Image (tube, rainbow, N blue to C red):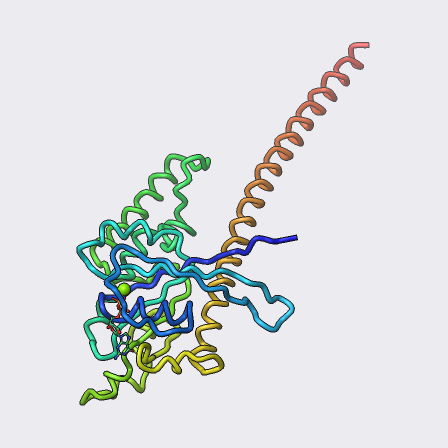
Length: 281
Ligand SMILES: Nc1nc2c(ncn2[C@@H]2O[C@H](COP(=O)(O)OP(=O)(O)O)[C@@H](O)[C@H]2O)c(=O)[nH]1
Ligand SMILES: [Mg+2]
């Protein structure tokens, strides 16, 4: 019996030239990408990952990496690759501070394509027009939705209200950064990783692939990150099933309550009419 293998989608974002394609190639093929070519649009690579390796819950998963071309000129056409995201790898060049700052803009592009990443739309303010909310309720929901949308438009870097999938921040070109006069920043967690409570690894990708060799602390972190992405997706799927079931349950309860009321009314009327009849006799 061949069971189909489940998959998760991870988008790899960051400025052009930071090393996204080199990173994805190294993760997926355990080899250095010799001559990285300019990524146009998006390229997809796949890795087979053992979820919870070595435990009774072990299960193979495909991890799909959507390596998004960093050229801003193609942004409009790459949007379509940013939907249905289970995890985000944000890549920046440790020798180029600007590439870290720009990650917020890249993240913003992902959020714009995934309504479920906004707490405002998924958890509090359902877009479901079939729900039986009163007119008054609907107008408040719309006001709140408009408010959050405006917030998002006004401050494109405000991520406080977001429901983001697991994020991994990867700093590349550690070799180049170490030779910089001021490399103090390498000792501490990066501001971007702190802001998004993201896991973080710093690497030399092309020159020294040993940084990701198996059983190194980086590769362990990476494996754990993939497990987290899968775990998060499973939890989300369970929440959706639960939501569906509880909706069904509330519809059934409502029907049952209506039946009880109708029966009670009928009994009451029946009782009245029978006692009335007996009086007449
Ligand atoms: N020195 C050094 N160069 C790197 C490293 N990672 C990537 N590169 C080089 O950076 C350039 C851009 O890499 P690429 O993967 O095409 O970046 P992308 O545009 O983000 O996909 C290439 O010439 C790589 O060989 C690294 O860790 N150290
Ligand atoms: Mg590339």
